[in-house]
Length: 249
Image (cartoon, rainbow, N blue to C red; front, side, top):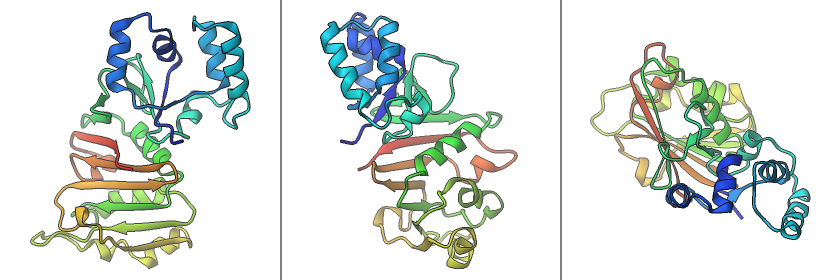
């Protein structure tokens, strides 16, 4: 079973208790099931007021105790789900925490950063999404053009293990440095010998003028769509950037 996300403990209690009908109704619109939980969180939920017959609670706790992630904290637990997020009611938390009213639209995670917002949590979230990746596809006509910044995707995000890296070459009519002049075997093998690289044949990303990162892992496929180029994740004076994360498994 592929678990989609994690709920923070207060939302888990609200969802399971069904006391606040309006909150549960909003959660149903945002929550992508099944959600992932563990023994540690279940004990915390009980302490926060989880309502469940004692026998049923003990049976469920026993089942959760046998799972390898039984004592994980929420961030570690979320890293084992597909979307790798924790839905929360708290407005003041950063990725991988996502506010259940504002950050989820049509089962998609949406993150918008102003030019002055710190990108560190976005970078860490991308690294988390890629940690189990078997294959990624990079689509950005100006990826090589902005290599001074975009090369950080390889240096600080992609996992150091066997990985197939595909990229789209620049679209017809675009005047920019060829992506293959930077993303090539010589470059990737300098970072990790088990990385391989090739031009993608996926029709969605061929002759495309949008920006995407497709991440394929055992948990499923996540597509990241960027409103501005990849360089605005790393450059010193970036534009506003919106990233939409969605399950395309």
